[in-house]
Image (tube, rainbow, N blue to C red; front, side, top):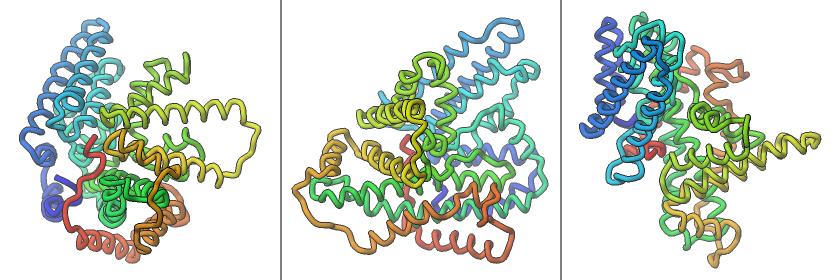
Length: 444
């Protein structure tokens, strides 16, 4: 089930009020049922349950080892390896079926196993299957994140079951959800109308077209993925728990390092904790570790060569950024020039991410740098106006973090004006929802 679907809107309007009429046990069962429904396929649900049951048994063995004062380290490594192999089988070998959300719930189960293996708090309290199931099946973040850590959210999720109706959080959650829906339906899907035809036959477009489409895709992927993260955040708040933020104006970054602290923040944190640091982090051969980590992050998105190249290129850019910081720190560059430079670099690397194949990406890169026999501009003036309008909005308007969680000069308030704005965003997006368009990150 998609957030941008009529089925979910029905759930939002009719089933959510029922949630707060139930007791803690009823809410727990209700949330597990919603998680099962969200998969939308019995086969996808079975694949999910097989992983969940396997990790639950693994957690019991880990806890037994700790109770007996034996080291759980090597068994933990084995369980992580089995999780990665399970993910890799469906993602890279059995390509006929890509189970929904498998990348995200695999990563979250690794955080769960890490907690059971190494946390002092875990050693003192018995493993709770009830806590684990609620954590892994909590439906707002189930399909595409944000990735959250078991240790940080198990207690918050349990408290959620006994909350009295949090009217303020429900209002703020609906506001965030509405703005996210608007970004998906009105912004991201509009940019897709520019981008998708181009990548079918890029050779019939000019160099100027290629520049324009590359810009449009930068907007599309940001609007699309941040929209899902914000809709998940909003639904979580309506249920009584605040999920982690995933975006913080990434295109305002002043360096590539800064970009990765703002873009897909929960994935960045996970790969730092579970890939970069285990490789040696900053302690040994930092540049190599960065390159390996980002290459692995690229392969996580897909097995094709263009994803490996995308991740490796970001690794090189991050490594270069560290070198420049070390040896050129005395140079003063205006922030606006830094932002522009980073945006152009990110904009260019998205070609590898969007292209359906490395061959297609190579062709687009040729056109991007001027090797195109086609001349002219093949998009309408409205395409240009809308794209520039969205671009201006990204760089001038506050993000969700600014609006709802920080003291920005433009800030959400419980008022008639803000209520009207959020209702307009919801219903305008709803009436323009011509068909259910999957989110880009559902593919990963």
